[in-house]
Structures are given as C-alpha cells and as structure tokens.
Length: 98
Image (tube, rainbow, N blue to C red; front, top):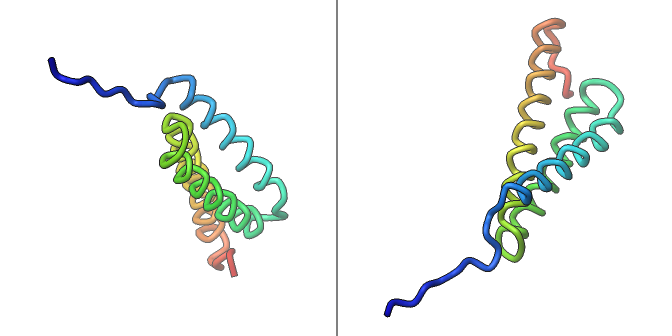
C-alpha cells in the first residue's frame, strides 16, 4: 500500500476570503492616511509591501489560503494606485510622486 500525504493547511475558499478581507481593510486604512494622490500611492506601496511579507510568512509557516487572498487583493490595490497615479500624470503632465 502506498502512503498518502495530506497537506496540514489545505487551501480553502474561506481562507482565501478571510485573507482578502483582511488585506482589503489593511490597504484601505493605510490609503486613508495619505493626503492626496502622492500620499495615497506611497502609503499603499508600503502597506502592500508589508502585506506581502506577511503573506510570505503565511505561505511558509501558516495558512496558504489566507496568503493567497492577501496576495491577490494586494496586487489589485497596487494596480488601483498605479491607475490613479497614471491618470493624474496624464491630466496634469506632472509626475505626482515626486
């Protein structure tokens, strides 16, 4: 008989949803700290970087489903911040982050 291996923390939909919800709240709170487009973009980059560090730790030592939710929402948050910066840049002709 062949041995069967089970994953200690299988990825579940509830875990992904929990990670996504927490990451959304995390990015929202950090985004509200920034005043204006530049502040919002820099705070979102910082919050996303910290969230990805937490996701990397979760992948290695915790729940991979939660890490997946965090990573997906963080990538979406960074995309939104990039779109806002690009829109402001296109409207004013001045790079908003410096």
